[in-house]
Structures are given as C-alpha cells and as structure tokens.
Amino acid sequence: MSYTVHTVGVHGGDGFLIVDGNNSVLVDCGFAWAAPKLLDDVRGILGTEGAPDWLVLTHSHYDHCSAMAYLREHMPTMQVAASKYAGHVFKRPGAWETMRKLNAVSAQEHGLSEFIDVPNRFVLDRVLGPEDMIDAGNLHFTVLPAAGHTKCSIALWEPEQKLLACCESAGVYSGEFATRILPDGTSVPEDVPYLVGPACLVGHDLSLDFIARARSLGAQAMISPHYGLIEGASRVNEFFTAADFFHLYAVRRICELYKNGLSEEEICSKFLEFFYTQVVADFQPRAAFELNATIMVHRVLVDCGYVEPSSTL
Image (cartoon, rainbow, N blue to C red; front, side, top):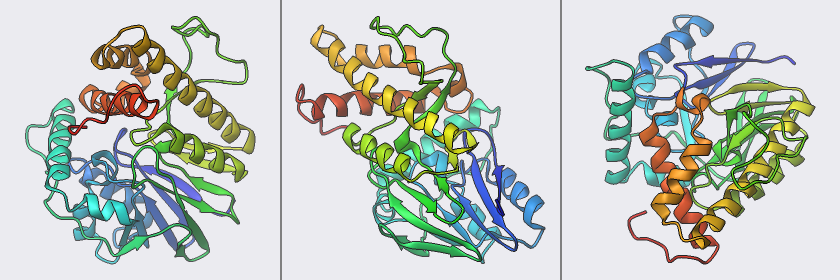
C-alpha cells in the first residue's frame, strides 16, 4: 500500500487525509467550530504551506462539510468537490439554518461559548457526477453514487489500491454487543461481529443497494465515516455483513412497532434506545441523532406503505 490515511480534526467531525507522495485528497472536513484544529492537523502532515489537491465532500451534513469555507480561506489552492445535489442543498436557506443550529449545539457541548459559525455560502470548484474521476498524482478515485443516507451522498473508489472511501449510506460503526439477543427476541448471527447503525434518511432500499455494490468491489481497505480505516478484505466484508443485517433489522423493527400501535415518536424513542450507543454518543450529539432517527423512521414507514409522506420531514 503506497498511500497513508490520516484522521484529522475532532472526533465526530473527522476528515480523512489520503496521502500518496506529494499528492493528497481530503475526504470531508467536519464542523465549522473545529476547523482550526483540522487545519493544524493537515499542516502537521503536509507542512505549513501544504494543502490537499482536493477536498471531496461525501454529503451535505454539517458534521462533514461546514469547515469548508475556513479551509478554503487558509488553503486557497485546494479544490472542493461534491455531488450536484449537494450543490443544490448548499443554496437552501433551511439547510444553512439547520447546519448553524447543530454546529452551535456541538460547539457548546465541547464547552465553547465563542466559535466559528457556518457561513451563508459554500462554493464548489467542481460538481461530481456518477463515475467521474478525482485525480491527485497516482491516486485515481472513481465517484460512486451512494444515495440512501442523503440524496447527495457519494463514495470514492480507488481501484488500483482497492481503497474505498465510504459514506454513511452504508451505516456507522456503533460498538460491540452487550447481548446477541435483540429487543424483538431474535438473535444476531455469528458472522455479524458488531453493531452498525443504519442512517438511511432517503430510502432503505437505496442504502441496501449501495451496501451490495460497495461490498462487490472487493476493497482491501475502507475508510468508514466517524470510525476510520478498516484494513483487510475480511474486515471490510465483516462491516458490510453487519451493515446489511442491521439495516434490514431496523426496517423490520420499525414496521413491527408501528403495527403494534406505537406512534412515530414512540418508535423513534425505541430506535434511540437501541442504536444511540455510547460509541455513537461520543461523536454525535443526541439532538443530531434524534433528528436523523425521526426522519428515518418516517421514511421507512412511508416506503413500506404505512403512512403518507409528511411535508415537514
């Protein structure tokens, strides 16, 4: 493996700097309030005058993209790329309002009363489409559409190195099991090594399709959001086994609870009890997780034909 992967920034708002010789790609950039820390980390690796060739945003959520403007100001040679749909999101006033609110919550939870806010404008140097290429020296990444977590989600695949920079449509590592008996009484299969929390906000079928495609690539290494580098084909495959299992379990459980008479709010509470583990709490504020869970529960019930779409979600 000729490249190195460095986790930069703060936990929960991580970026991942992929370095190969004199070239590098930064995948995601985290919170606006933590941008100075991420910049210091990048410069500690690339040198005080160094900058990544590219910053690629896997999607448009505040914990993945809101440091962008600060980094562009301090590393003007770095080019920024994201999907076309992410570009649309960045133009929405409602998206800015949500990012500012959640950035402030995260900053305050880290003990800050003064912090860098989310700006009211993001500028992309390049809009990415399916199968587009991101080139940086000997690194040649193919853009994979990865809707499921969001409509704008993408992943990056480097076929020569067999490196996958994944996104949250595949789920997020959420810790070890306290027990292999699930709340509905079923057991976790032996080939599922740990908990992967689903985050399919725009469609569980889309997430499952992405998991299947990502798994089929045969990656030798994978960057997993909010976790880091997973090395070895067998360990990558273990992640996708867990991701597939818990996506299907979550959908089944949400539908069962609804059929048993629970409201969406009550189902969301049950979802948090199981999936909002201490591992997740260490990187994601409860308010942000609860917002995502509320959207996901409603989306699953819509997709499965139990409720009509809400105009507010």
